[in-house]
Length: 403
Image 1 (cartoon, helix red, strand yellow):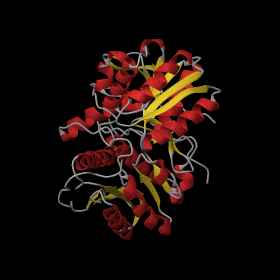
Image 2 (cartoon, rainbow, N blue to C red):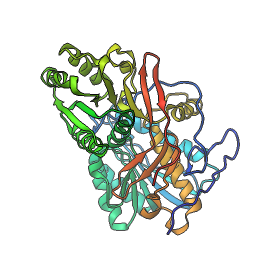
Image 3 (cartoon, rainbow, N blue to C red):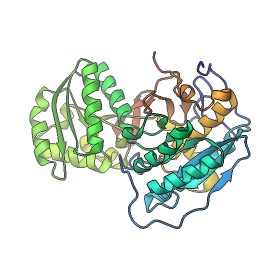
Image 4 (tube, one colour):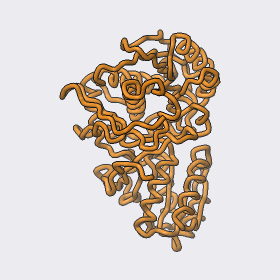
């Protein structure tokens, strides 16, 4: 079947607006009051499970009265930030349903308790109740338990993990993947004449993904990797090695969350590096007040969604729930709005992999996105510059995906 052909999703009224459309459909929502929230607020990159005591299990609920049933699996009783984030993501999903014009879907919301066992039980319940697609789980360790059941039924999954290793074979990730950030920032730097690159990244699963994406992106642009180092708890040795090579580099990637980026920049400065003489590059995890406040990181560039979409979403969320959304709440909003749009326009193949992987992609709160056939995603990201007042766009997000 061919993909969607620019269908329009019209907002029903000024106060009930659709924030996602199939590509070239409804425009992204404009900005409103500023909200400063970090991508590293929750979950941290590749944080695969909750820590601490869990809360009491939450009862399953059904929201909406549409014809097509959709399972939504979240760690609502998860410990600490897991449960907080899950509740915010649940709210956002319900908000998407309320703001979409006459959605023909019903959300079957299940609590997986932040465990693989809970994910399997929740998925089985949703499938037995007629779910045609599953949204979630959030944690990487829980996704295989869901996928084992959905693959046997030929049911697609849109999960929210940032770990690409759990994608594929009917599992699609709607999350902020480091690969998209790296590709965007390296492409932009190369387009401004940068040819020699250095990098300093954490020695963990996130760093491994960044390393592979970084080396591929630099090679694709005909650049050279002058130095690449990983650090553990002690940054001083790797920082010295990179600092000594910066004289022959045009750009330096530091890929980590906000607090760690500042510590890494301090270690480089202590090792004798003059960071004002090189273009600093980062990922969406730089969207953090600690980064903006660091003198060493001023002028650094990072890839992230255009912030105007989240600001508008956060304003509407605040009005509705009298609280702030977690940064990842847009994922469930976009997932539910996408499913509602596909249910309306795509007939019998509405949730099939061929429909989800439409190369034109979709437009959501955080800009353009499309699912790849391997289950990962590509996002249309802006390039932001670090200033003391926050991130300032220097290159907008694309309006469409290239061929």
